Image (cartoon, rainbow, N blue to C red; front, side, top):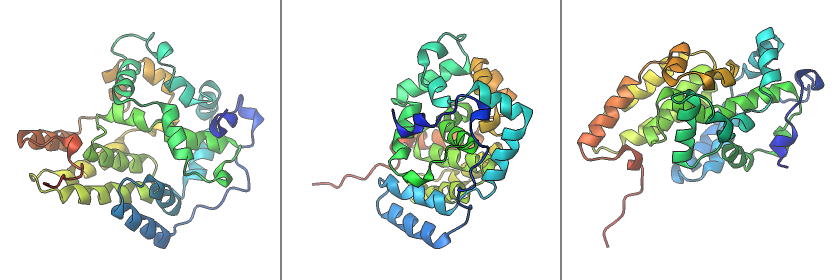
Length: 272
């Protein structure tokens, strides 16, 4: 049993709302900058990302989590969806939902990309200190913020290409306003813009994603089972999702110039 599955609650009244030992959410800009510089030197060193999020957190996250968990709607979702990883990785059950549903589109995406919700948990757990685990209800809320990441890709239409990832970060900032999301989203856009293969609306795409995230209700606070059962476009309309115009335009312009958006940030091979 992994550490994460060991703390999944069975019922809402079995755990405290929030343990008093949780650390205060504080900014540490110097630490964030040091880790960011290390990340720029080695973009594959994902161990540098977690400290940036720890240093540029969503300072209102505790209050948002407690407010939702104390609401009748929050209590109902907490009881009915104790572990999103188990729901999202049960493709057998998801495939039994109607064709064309969000569930089918999600399964198609995850299977095509070779991803799993548990895989994301395992990857992030490599960099999460043991003292960051808290056996309380707020942890359930925080896990949902993590576990809905790939579902956001599916719902928004932003792919796993470099620009798509920055757009998801900007979208997520409007949902979960940790400065790290905004900082990394625009910093990534700067790196993309350095690849002057063809001029495309990179920053407009990221800004548009940030605006789209403001319209959509917080996905972490939505009944995911109900959304998965909806037809894909119905689920998007229900959440107020609209087409990411500048992201699509950027992809079209890259492809017209013979550039694959998914290989844009690949290292350039030097001639022998």
